Length: 169
Image 1 (cartoon, rainbow, N blue to C red):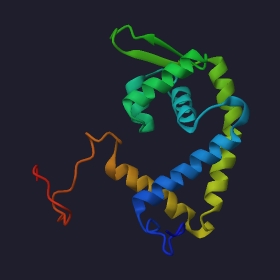
Image 2 (image 1 turned 90 degrees about the vertical axis):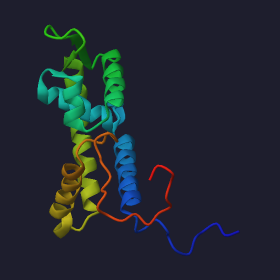
Image 3 (image 1 turned 30 degrees about the vertical axis):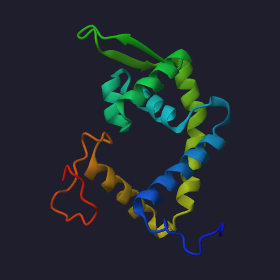
């Protein structure tokens, strides 16, 4: 049995390449972030809360594209660490209003230069002439498919599927 494949079978799969690029970005951010101990997702939720001033968890889901249960878990953890505060809204007792604390702003301020350095390093991997179109392509994918919830992304019925048929098809 060979340990190395002569051809990388996944090198032309856009899905796999996007996943691997995301892993590279997450690993780079996690390795560089040091003192604040924020994950990339925690950083973006904290940043979104800071920009919003006060936002519902639903608004944070919409702003970040992170699914509802993950945002709820991230917010809970950031509240426990004193980086966010959360209270029930006056107009709807079922909804939380989330806002950044002074400690959260300090963590964000500490993490932001590292985030910028990580983004610069990631973009350095893309030829300078292609960077703008690379960012536009990523934005286009997100705009085309919208929220990541599987309930939101509908399969295209106009494209033939040559894969195996299941009883539901």
